[in-house]
Image (cartoon, rainbow, N blue to C red; front, side, top):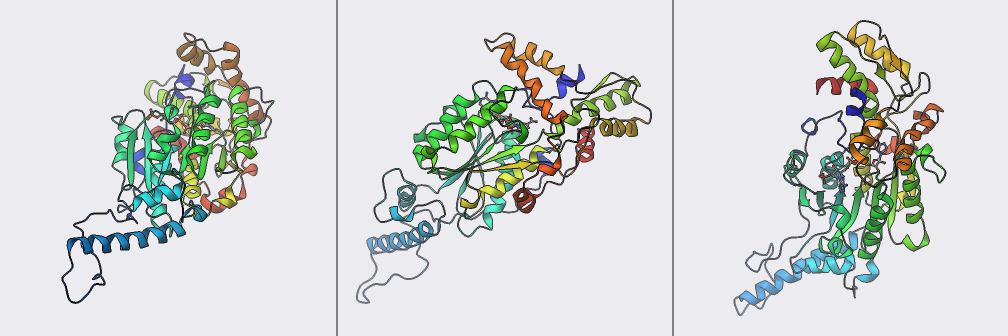
Amino acid sequence: MALAISVSKEMRPHRAPRGVRIDSVTPPPTRFPTRFPTWSPTRSPTRSPTRSPTRSPTASDKTHFEALQLKKAIDTQIKQSPDINTSEITSPRRGSVAFQSSSVALGIMTPSILIVGATGNTGRAVAQTLPKLLQSSSTLSGYRVIALTRTSSSPVARELAKLPGVEVIEQNWVEITADWLREHQVARAFIASQPEPNQFAEESTFHLNALNAGVKYVVRISTTAANVRPDCPAYYPRQHWAIEALLGSPEFDNLQWTSLQPNIFSPFVMSPAAEFIKRYRKTGEQDTLRLVPSENAPIGIIDPDEVGVFAAHLLSQDDTSTHNKAKYVLNGPEDINGMQIVAMVEQHIGTPVKDVSYKDVSFIDMLYENQYAATKQSKNVIYSMTRAAETVWQGKCSTSTTSKEVLKLAAPKRTPADTLKALLED
Ligand SMILES: NC(=O)c1ccc[n+]([C@@H]2O[C@H](COP(=O)([O-])OP(=O)(O)OC[C@H]3O[C@@H](n4cnc5c(N)ncnc54)[C@H](OP(=O)(O)O)[C@@H]3O)[C@@H](O)[C@H]2O)c1
């Protein structure tokens, strides 16, 4: 069944087809500069040290001078850094960001922004966009960008490793500890966690560790806004609701966060149309065109790359406090409904589509069979996924719900037609 091959990650844990390939995004032109110089006793000072004219500078004078210069640079950086609590500068607590930054004085490491899910639907564009944005920041230009993957030899991870300013690290994010975050000087993080039944346990562990490690700001991927509520019949939006509730509790006040609530990713909605067209072009035959949307209800489907681009903009803000505890609704630039998708298909194949099945969630059968039947996951829980589409059919997920901050910072531009075109070129 063609639809099962094309469903996206939220509905299907296998990789979703993507509208845009990684090589289609222009990487930043140069490696961004490191603000903190790496300490080296042999490095020449940029200016002559102040010294007695009666004797030549010794190696120890030079080292002392360099250390002073370095300390000055670091003090300035610490004061400027939006992620450092300046009250900690004079006597920083061990493990605090100020302490970590002080340790840079010994030539160790600069703060970093961690991307969890960097090889995925949304994370890839974060990794592609963030280094470039950091370059123009007055306070974050020295931050490193860490892209996380479980398999650094995968094609996507290898592409990410080529991006200027991106450091790929092999690490399963679910095993990250507070110590790991401290060791990697993580000051900010992006996380796109999988909507599996253990999502709450795993993602909340990550946030708790982030809080305890002194991470200052997290941008996370939630799901379609109309579903993020405690009584959503589908299980995974309830998990997103619970994670947002956890982050919003007073216990998490020291960790700033923003939760992005994107509409359904456009490749998921448009893939059945692309597969239908491809098959027709190849064989001249028509299958049933199975579409998740209803005939008439408008949906603001969004390209996941554009979600990642918006996340990168948030992560590169000097002051994140205006976005703290915000839940932003993201839609693409245009609504689409089932009938309009059929019309697009007919335009591509030049003949009427004979058989259309709207509100079709039959992909769940194959998903269950391939992914869950052999596991101990509850069938009841897994099948509840199909009910996520109810709010779409009720017309609650149109572009009219987009948050104004999204339009201001990085308004999505890719239309459903753009997505279909890209899928047909794949
Ligand atoms: N699909 C949709 O239509 C849609 C719409 C709105 C919101 N969402 C939300 O988007 C979120 C997912 O974001 P995404 O699609 O950007 O992520 P994703 O592509 O599903 O996953 C990101 C990366 O996580 C790693 N990963 C996959 N399975 C893992 C596992 N079991 N344990 C540890 N790491 C794993 C993989 O990287 P490596 O293999 O390189 O380690 C993968 O590339 C979900 O919470 C979902 O609810 C989805």
